[in-house]
Length: 282
Image (cartoon, rainbow, N blue to C red; front, side, top):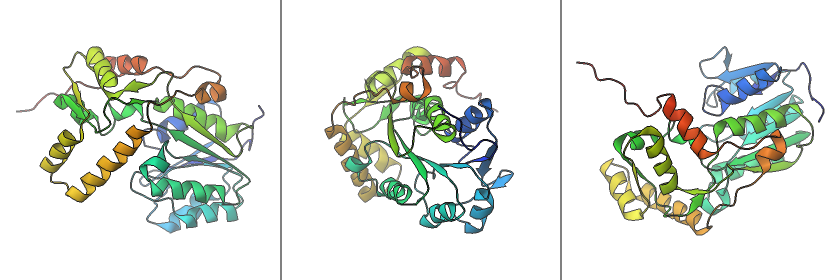
């Protein structure tokens, strides 16, 4: 596939995050010019400060578009990108958002499809492997129990490095216009199996609780409003009702190599000390 937008910088939003920093690395490894944007970086970008949008977008040949959890992709930003003639947008979305009622990401997808940008691609990964060592599951792993009300339904865990590799290809090569890629690892695993893999790799004792009652009790102990917890339980129940995830070959199709296995991820993360607690200080 031919290279596109040669010489024009590629704007990467969320460039310091789990996926964004890997997208930056993958693009630079491919020889692309990268405009790495963040709230505190040399290229300033803040969803809450629209005055930072145009300078970040100006002259960009493509945009890796994402917003942090809980933050909406602003229609004005997408309109600005189209008005400035940005030819290519790759949106980081998520799988199963219809079933879970994730209006934030559903809205973002609608915006991109209707934006008028000549070329767009949507990435729909499921659970990031890195949630366990860089994200919100790490404290639970260290505490010895991961709790999520999804029962024993098998999930399509996917490595952030594979998401980034697909994004980099979609941003720099032809053949991805109007495509939506569902990104999973090569195997589907239940959370119990994933947690057991982490326990074996790390040498830690970690268990999994997949029932709604335990989840509700733990969230109540954290002081969270019951209405929020009930809404989350309903969303996870809808996800579980979809049944076991079926792995896709989209990562291999786009990158030309196999997706990383969860076992390989867990072994590498453990070897890097991901689940070692920092020493206490007197």
